[in-house]
Length: 117
Image (cartoon, rainbow, N blue to C red; front, side, top):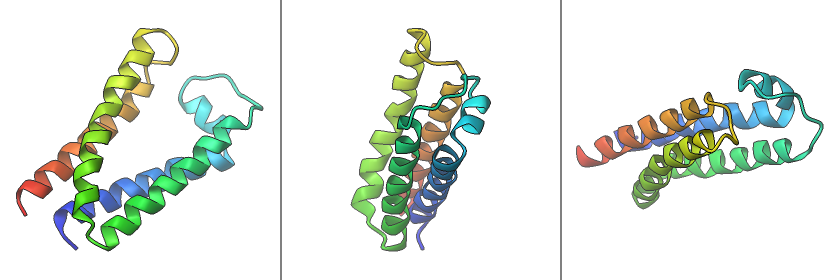
């Protein structure tokens, strides 16, 4: 497995963990984010979508789909922009930026790994 594939695999595992958390323990995840508990089903939908994304990342890593690695760098690098905007606009707690930073660091890791190939 290439270094780029390993970076994408790790990101996929990170998505699995978050997906399971939002799907099975949404209020625990909300508590970690400083948000009030919810009974709305949309957060579990987000968990399900994270698991689907995780599947794509993990399978692309296992199959060395380099083109997807490249596309993911751009998408993951923009997450910090959106999450920061949500915080600045007052529609999300500041801790959301942490998730954006994780996405950005993962994107940088993948980009650097692709350059060394």
